[in-house]
Amino acid sequence: MKDVTIGLLTDFGLDDTYVGVMKAVIAGLAPRARIIDLTHNLPPGDIRLGAFKLWQSAAFFPSGSILVAVVDPGVGTQRRAVAVAWRHLTLIAPDNGLLTYLLAEAPPKLAVTLSRPEYRLPHPSSTFHGRDIFAPVAGHLARGAHLDKLGPPARDLVRFDWPRLELLEGPQLRGELLHHDRFGNWITSLGRLSDVDGELDLQPWLPSCAPARLPLLVRLRALLPTGLALPIQRTFADVAPGTVLAYIGSEGLLEIAVNRGSAAARLPLESGQEVLLTYEGRTG
Image (cartoon, rainbow, N blue to C red):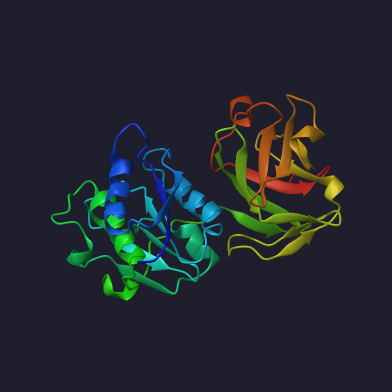
């Protein structure tokens, strides 16, 4: 039996026993597996946020890891349960869009539908596939089961539409607000960006946009739907407490924050609203 790392991401919360039961099922099949809790506090049914958190986390897992993602408002319906393998990890999830950003980043080596009953718990329920299907599959894979034995190939995996990320003349970037984190920092789709000798180097995280260099970093502004135009800062402390700022976050995406405060509470912003990365004096 191999020492395998298994990551769990769900919207189950921690008030109930759902997460603990999934871990118990995995432990019964693969007691040497290391289990890492990514988060269990996703808003119930928020597939898009779950997809982002998977993309945000997957690259940091050691090679050979297994991720189990359960954000599954369609549990018990005809939606497929799938296991999808990339070069360095395998992801087990409902086929409902949770894999959208990972599929945008790289095509998988293999994807299968989890249809073989010997890799499930007996008599699976119609409401708890995390326990009855996804956790057992993770345990069997950790024990050395081959992915192609779990079921037939799964083609045409479900994906939702990518958020906006568009390179305009100038060059400028058009994107949108994705969500805010628990600190109230708004994450946008603008990126991935890195500071290279006073310019912003764009290596897009979505395939809808071409790479580019945005010169004159000192003149670049994040233009919000409120009309507020924010210069790009390097860190929170570059502005006074209580001041709104734009900066490049740890994933290389442009973010909007308030130093020692909450941009979500301070600004009348909503997910899906347009954000421009433009130059001082331009309106888009």
